[in-house]
Length: 167
Image 1: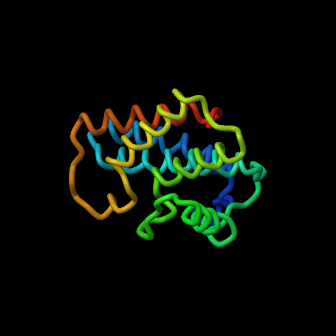
Image 2 (image 1 turned 90 degrees about the vertical axis):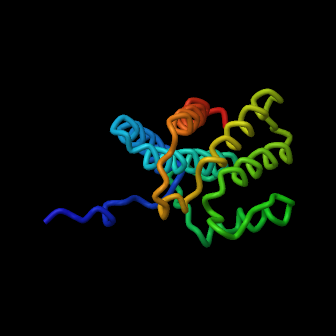
């Protein structure tokens, strides 16, 4: 008998985040084409989130296949970010696109490896655009996204994926 879906999942890691983010982007495209606009935005938000997490953990030197856990990696990163002034709410803490972006930017600055000003500006802009359209609680609501919102989220997601190696 084949192993069930959840038993086939690999531990969270940079490699898993990168691969899954591309899959969720493709899933979102399929949904958008079918008119499932809110579902597309929902998946694209996760694609951006995973891209940001992969970039952050890669920057701090985590190996691409090293497991990333809530207690050992995510929660300590959030706690440290808060202590350094990043506004990070408790609700959906691990999913905050804007906070992950700010934390990534701050880390790069702290290690004298900041982004070029125009790239950093675009990174923050794209994160803000996505943050205005998505959070993980979207799954609880029946709202249907407008076409312009789908287009905006798709553009932001594509930007993150295209630039993932530069993050």
